Amino acid sequence: MAFKPLHDRVLVRRVESDDKTKGGLIIPDSAKEKPAEGVVVACGEGARKDSGELIAMAVNEGDKILFGKWSGTEVTVDGEELLIMKESDILGVIA
Image 1: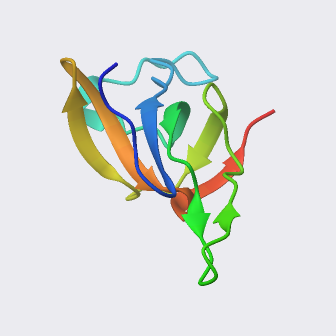
Image 2: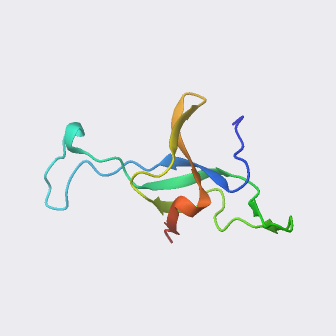
Image 3: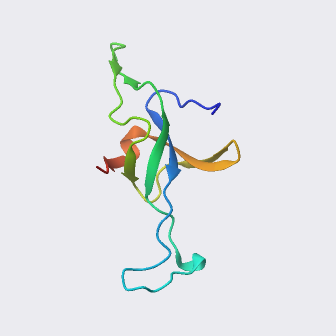
């Protein structure tokens, strides 16, 4: 991959949601919402304090994360649709 996020930004690949509900109903594409789950593809170095000290990122490449519904900016990298967002837009890491 030829893209590296800067500062406290992360590059995220969305995780596709299921096509069926728990009850077995098939959800058509027109009714699906974009998933708010993803996998971190790349991370920046982290933010800096006013003193210049680096604040390490709380997420790493490969972490499965949950983010806000309207978080991030959609970008195309190597023909793949990805999201770039600030670390603060991430709600949590899924264990």
